[in-house]
Length: 292
Length: 295
Image (cartoon, one colour):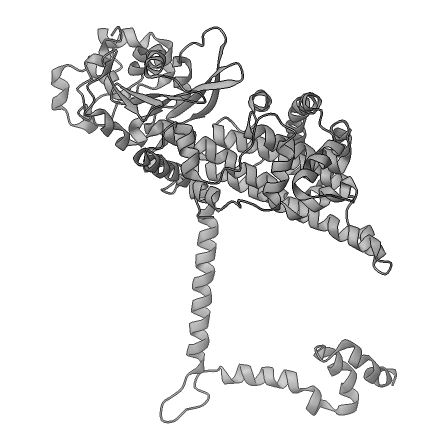
């Protein structure tokens, strides 16, 4: 009784959206024809999706195939989403994560470059700003003013930067030297490392930049080259072996012993190069004599 | 987020409220500040030459570097973006609280909004943490090198000083008062994971913060803030920064302000994005410095 009386005044408040509420409140008065509308339409939906329940024209019409198609489509979408979700954590393993898609272990770590920078003179200060795989950069400051950007990079990830040295006749400690624009000078050491000085602020003249380039520990830098490292230990016979079959060669050979005693190379990872490329400048032998 | 760092730099506004606010605050810092939005101008400034061929090479290299995920330049930008979104959200919340508090009928809603000072303290410390994380992403140091971050703050010069001055003024001195830096630690002590989760930037940064769980993240943030506070104290003392001075500096560019300091801070939070603006410029400069060295 109370239900029937409470029904009408409440309904406008709740709006027509609350179908279940009106179902409950109006069921006793209006009978089941009206109230059963929602369940009945559901029932019709279920029955009509049974295969072969009716025919359209002369063709046998199967409504189930449609729902099947929807089901398959939804399954595919769900599968793709799930797949994407599970692949997401492995994003860093997918290609495109590194510069030039080069594996990080093939690039010399920038940490090894840091101690090869020139020692600051009195009144100067060397502030390291970036240290990445294959790159290290420092600012040379005098007081508060930045004089130059000094950097060493591994050209393995930027092969195009090598091209500018091909036609250079200038040499600094026998390595090719190039001036880029009015403030930058670059040196290619051991065909692998680019050393660059870029004048900042009031700028540096060519002479000063070349002096700074010469102040880097170039012989130690050349010794970091994993390709050149192999050269001394390899007698002519090694060329006969296919690249995959070459042994790591950590034998007590006279050429290697001297280098292995240097602490830098113990960490520096003079890994055997998988395949030796022919050097652009045939610097392989020059790299052996760091006294240059 | 397919735009490279230099494309983001190009899209920065040349003259809007953000730029005006930064120009105003730069009058407090010695040295001139320029709103650098042209990649070509930035490249030729770093390279000391405007040879179009060289500039083009640097640009190509910079784009290649910023597309490589391992190099972290874009990740640094996404950190700044996350923080910027959080600033907007916190600013919006406080605008709402201000407006709602003034209307008699919905006054009770204002009680629901979080205590603005605590929220502001969290916002500031997340910004400092983002600065530190972005620093490690760009410079390539391990993610929790607090001491290296503290040292590098002392090396901040030019634009970076304006950037830090804006952070100190807009996010500490204006909303929290002149003794903000001394109160910050106490305010952070009251922060629980509930406040942390109210900021959208936390959700964006949580995966990049070292450690697991809110407590670990919060302790990381507090350690970062400790390093920053040590430096910021000296910075504020050297430049003689205060809320009043910041307002006067801002008035030179954005016009007279008749409200309170806290309202000015709310206004700036909700309607400017100084942090991500200067962040894009800082990352772009580092990226160009590297690209110029590698071509």
